Length: 355
Image 1 (tube, helix red, strand yellow):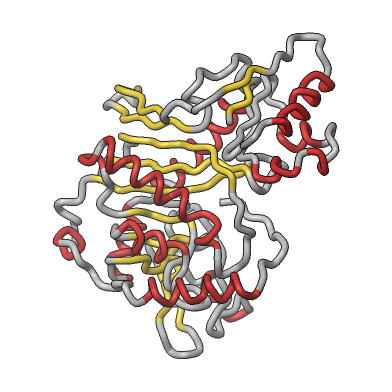
Image 2 (cartoon, rainbow, N blue to C red):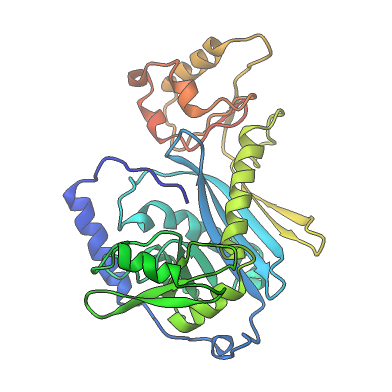
């Protein structure tokens, strides 16, 4: 998940976010709750999931939210859901969930409605769980809201409760020699917040594993190790790969997208990896074509954008351009004061304006 800093939200918003974190934290479960978790071989575990957000290059507000489900222990992708989203909440360390989790919850809900038998029995999250400023990171937030077991897996150490990436910490990393070696992350309060794990024999950098929800740290570390073909757990790695690929295919497609497929797609895969049946997003209420043939400059596209201000209501807007013109590039040809509502445009990828 690529993140960029943004303007700090007002103090009243931060207070609300802290209050909500505290309320949800009261529902957090840090122990094993499923029979398969208590079996050393994870007997009964058949589906593991992973989530990720990948951002459009040069646009910190447009991203692709991805949910994948893999078979276990084969680690083959059996379901994927990708959706272009617009992030309106700013990124702030310690409050990532309020920026990204709503879209991941939506993806889980779509899966529950369309393919309930494919719902994962555990979710891997590219981020922290209880290893967090207030003990309630993005993996905890997603776990409590979806009521699914969740594991937080981070590539960098979040320096909280006295944890520091200092010489002593680096020496502990150096002593991780074999795949599966670990050391506990003990905060200044004496609490074990997570575990550093050498997840692959060829990786010199550990993963930082922490409890998200409804799983113990021991089970979380054990399962993370068993799901790693490379440094990152395969569910997270596949979610990242497929979200980036979806952005490339969607923004770089030479042909205009079919109405109803522009912003999201999900599919169940058969054993060969081919999609059996697409699950498409509902049709949009209106659409407006903006011609942009070869040889026609940005001016025509710009003028079409200006005409949008005459519409009585634009509750949700997507801009599309046949050559994949990015939103930032499109808006640089326009006066921002003429198009104030475009601050909240989700994405730009084709040639049709959907609103």
